[in-house]
Image (cartoon, rainbow, N blue to C red; front, side, top):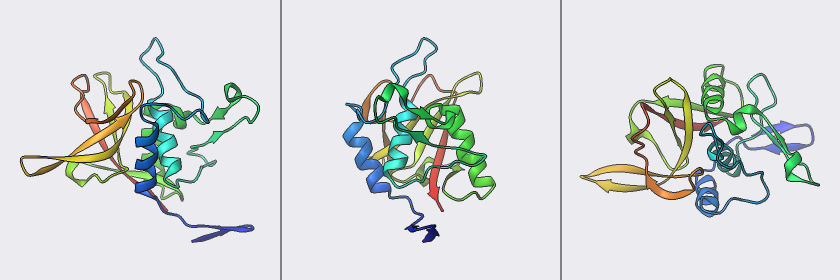
Length: 181
């Protein structure tokens, strides 16, 4: 627990709350946040949704050299502002990695090679054949296939709950263990 001016904050990630949020809003977006519809370049709401899940799990905003934040405009969500890493898959991937490598306080992630190391609330991000991370998802359940624990994911763009993590269009998957310190 850390003391910040006049309040205390426990630095931890509540995986159950992140997953609860994901399951609740995977098929119908939370109107409290701006929704990013599908763009012509293939972009959409996936990372914005994942960031909301991370925030629901207790991840604190970061306003440092590796920022991750969302600022609500009370009058109109069309005027909300956010860091690039809040809404762009490639940027979130690198922000999480840099924050881990630099031992920055708050939200970070360690990339693991084995999918079996993932837990509820961890992320799977997908890389295309150009080497760009283009999609973000959150692990919200597991199934059993041949005695192995296999993750199911929830996502936006397209909106889905507890589906297979396999994406045939992806060249590579990045398995991201979420940490908050």
